[in-house]
Image 1 (cartoon, rainbow, N blue to C red):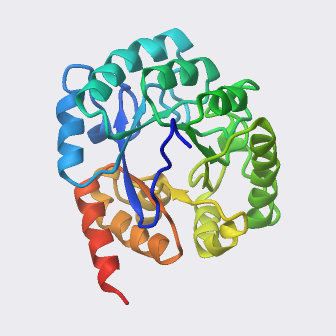
Image 2 (cartoon, rainbow, N blue to C red):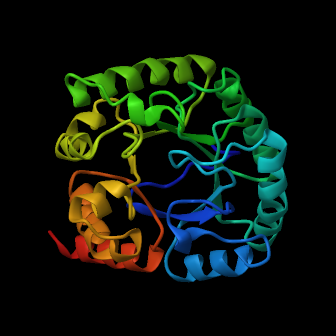
Length: 269
């Protein structure tokens, strides 16, 4: 119930990415603690409904940092942001229960866990105790090993099966507000990512909202042989397809353009 409030997903929402890291794959998404609030203010003006703060880069080969360093990057910015915009839904992108616990105490309403609870056994109990929403994403391994684990026979069936195991664990732990993320780019090849997009209807079987994160990812820029900086038009095209397939949250680097996609989608009867 997210501290007494449930995220209204009767219409799709935009989650803007706020990377408090020096090494995220898209340089344009990186912010420092000095300019973070200015960036978040712009994102809100551009149409973001949710701000997703991450202080640990999960790109393949990213530098590992301690939970304390992650909190040192995250905490001061989150505290200032919650004070500045108390009604905004703040999400924290972390797979560490200790970081999630502190973030919830600071006012985070969503924990966005790329591991879906597989990397920290305490995550589900922390989220359940805090009564916040939980994005349960599919990933195999960890950010450093996932590239070697995309060995599926039937990718959609296996991703659904592995998600289902974690969903049942999360429900048993007492998590009430689940959001499902297929995990595009995490332990999937380019081809497997597009298979999952084609099969996205299958992910509605649990009745939970679906969050999708494809913004400027390698599944786009490598497929088109361009750079992440050139990948915005193709990102927008995929966003429209994902909305047509019933996605409830778009996790994006560019909320202004994503808002335009949402408005175009509303014109389609």
